[in-house]
Length: 82
View (tube, rainbow, N blue to C red):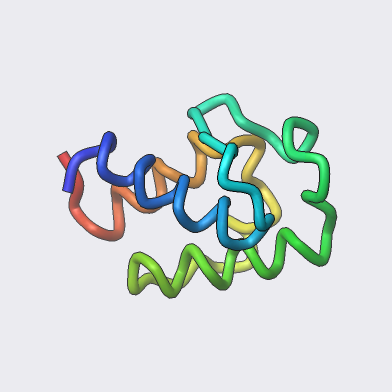
């Protein structure tokens, strides 16, 4: 799986979680960039990402993500992306 494919799949997850078809994430996307991204939605987002990619983040990873790019880096490690 390529990083491009990961970002495409993340777009789907974000659009579903935040009910907004216009969301397109980049490596620099943060919670400040998405209006409804609060602590509760962060939990829903993490669960949805884990389900989409068949992985589990540990708590340290979840609390340390500063942007979507950091999340993608962990996904790459777990799914063996190119």
